[in-house]
Image 1 (cartoon, helix red, strand yellow):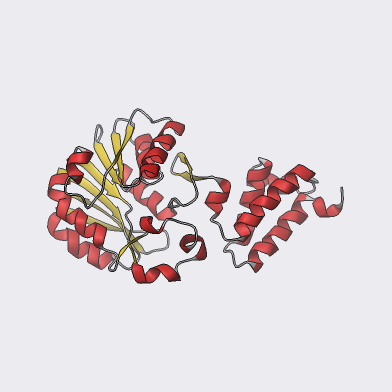
Image 2 (cartoon, rainbow, N blue to C red; image 1 turned 90 degrees about the horizontal axis):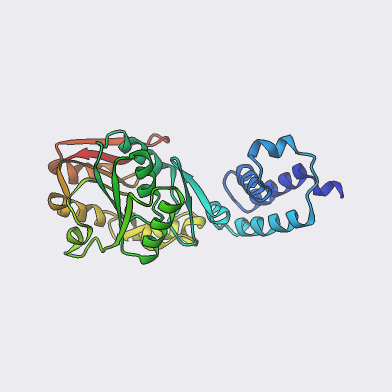
Length: 285
């Protein structure tokens, strides 16, 4: 086997290729693909850096590298993403779970009382529903989404992570007048990472987002606040008195969110993400 087949040489070549394609964190992307394809931990890529790769391994890697080089999201290429204590399986076109959402879920879970009924609006992959069911073992979660495929993915990921008995899902349109009834509200906890991108922001988004993720899961309309305004309208019938509300929002929307929900909540806390940006609300009715 020629030296060009050494793991470390191919890893370095992949990093250079990704860098030329404008991919952020090219080394970490390369490491993730190699670890996935070779069934190794990241550190083992360096422990076994002199290992020559077989023809089959090179072929498998080439396809993964090609897809990522076309700016397909890394999570789609890998087929899954870690989220809190869960492993979430992704299909192309789904909203990729993000660290900011994980931060919101972890902060919320610490405040949820035992035996709570939780509603996850816009459940998508089921990452929030599944993670909360795992973090709050006496609680039940209902995921709601307008997309039937999202309902199926939520139930699939709940089963894969061992909480199928405490996660259910219903197909429901947030803007339908029967939404609360369809979801069997009211609830002790309501949580959502809804669409909050404005229409005029869409074309400026990162290639991985704009060309691959579901626009309807990201863009809410002209203002980006359409879903939050609907939440505020439904809150008296959707959330029980003293119930908890958790909402993720855009980095520049905190003031609007605070103005919208302060009159409706007895407590309201705006949390910053790891980048120091105000990104989610946790409040009590």
